[in-house]
Length: 79
Image (cartoon, rainbow, N blue to C red; front, side, top):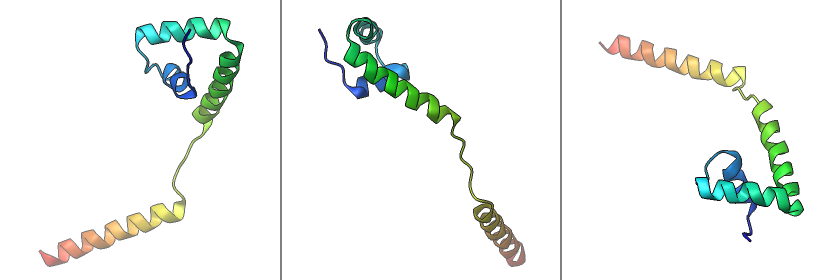
């Protein structure tokens, strides 16, 4: 019987395991309750991550745009 790590479970969730390893993890999840608990916790975290949306602060975007505008002006005055 295999001893799967949390890293193995994360790879399994993201479909990054080989066909053989995926099959072995699937069987282990059906028979190893401790592994199943770890899997369920990781899946819960995975599903929570999907809901997270990140975006930069308006102030950061404004500074980038101002810098870009200043750079463009500088380039056009040199020509």
